[in-house]
Image 1 (cartoon, chains in turn red, cyan):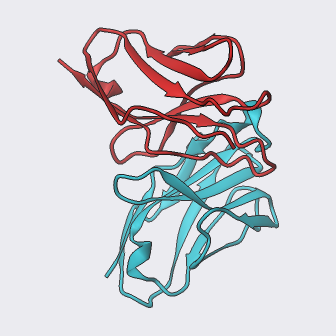
Image 2 (cartoon, chains in turn yellow, cyan):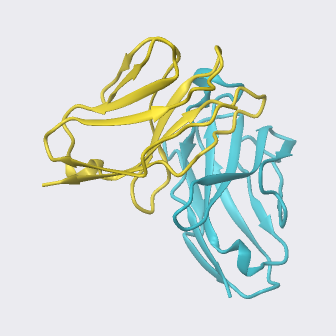
Length: 111
Length: 116
């Protein structure tokens, strides 16, 4: 399973776009990039996922580089409620489908 | 739709005691998981199930047992509680588990367990 590298923390001003990077240089061709977040003390929440193409949903956008070795999660207009730990995860690809959670990036949105 | 529910929310155990953490999902998902999260760390998989009657070990199974008699329920059993099992426990479910889009997992609110 591919490993990911994320900065331990980031700050973002309220109302501005938050761009969270993730490196996954060992990703294989059939592995997806998933993003989850965990707001303090709550269970993780699914945000978005992608394989090759950029993806957008009501929560965020996911930009994956052409070589698939890195990606960026974009929260277009961050609010205080987006303060959370964000996890970039490469899907295991095994039969059990478990997600390997690292330490993630602690995003602090400031007023 | 309640999603994934867990009980209890909090529990304090003495060393050597046993307990069962309950997890129920109402989304008719085949796959269910138990994770633990230690302070300041990411989640680690304890056990998972791909359907009723089928369970398997994850990364950190020692000291735990599971069963899956129905699609909805996936209880986690601690037989002899130890301080090292102090953690927050999350249950999750998904419609499939073989990588790709089916890895969208839905998590419960967690159970905070302290072993003294």
